[in-house]
Length: 167
Image (cartoon, rainbow, N blue to C red; front, side, top):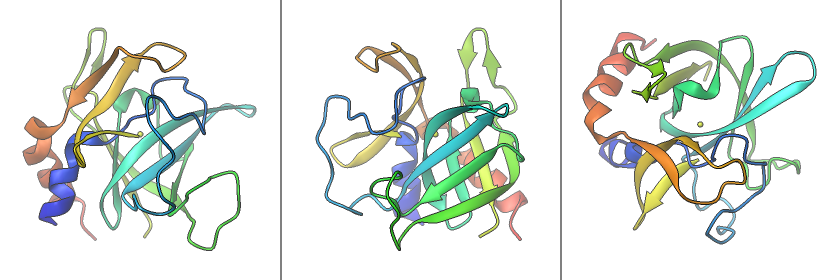
């Protein structure tokens, strides 16, 4: 549990509108070496889909950015994937039961950009193997600079929400 809480500060690395499969300023990781990474498909109507990254913080909780426009009926969380476009035995596709946005999240200005997703069972910024932030916004092509929500100060809220919504 402590390791997961240390990983919290880097929940979503994918910049807004970044294309799935893009690696921005990095290299392809060894398959399945980042089991805490989550991939979120957010349906925005019948045709459009928004992609967000996330961080598995507990077996049934994912941390992502609140600006991802998630609602319980429009998001699918994919865990255990090295390539979400290829079928893999390790992949899990989970429905989201509950969405828990930070109560002080605002879009203008963008503040407290955090959201917990509780599933039935949004790419971290990782520095020196320790997650540090969640992308709040950045350039369309994913190049720096991007603005991140530093999540270390939100650990008490995250713990409180996970305790409130335990099964």
